[in-house]
Image (cartoon, rainbow, N blue to C red; front, side, top):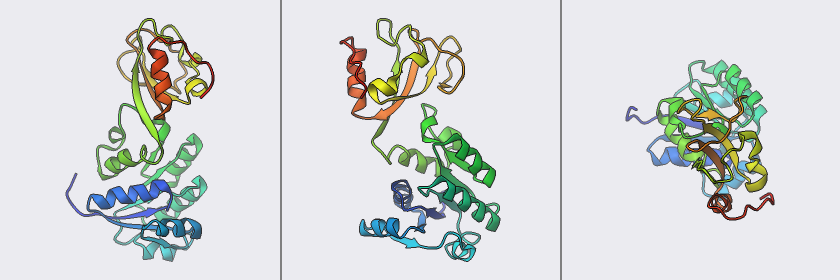
Length: 241
């Protein structure tokens, strides 16, 4: 990564947008945060953030904050997916070569963002042991998103090794129901039957958990305590978290 100061526009005074801006500023980048929501801007300003309210549907306003000018990167981090799609379309119409990063948890929205011209779209629920930099080649964008995607909420990610005798052993991946019992989401599995690479949970194949397999799980920090307790051999509490 070049040690050059970049001019970055972050659109979105959401917790994600503000954390992205904070991390970028700490690394010496020149950051400008804008939003079209008076309420979100007011809340951010009251917390000490320098956020400017602009009309995101006005191309002249986008140009004024650097789109099509001196902006090196645009982060589209509005709360509403449709607004992010519209913003990406508008920005790429003004500056076709501008790198644009957005975030979404919806498969349909991810496809729309790419179709609109987004350079990279981050899906938090598919982040796993690969780390986000493997998707974006350890660039400025990658390092920032790696620090902020998990920072936006109280989430942890863990690798869980399947051991013989645990309640995981012998179960199929789609039978675990960790979301119901522990408020945890299985991102993927290293199924030794298929090799040593991570297979995302959306893969249609059924995976039987055997000794040596590894689950990659994401969820609130406090939810892992009971999960690890049950893995230790105590009676499993079947009450959903």
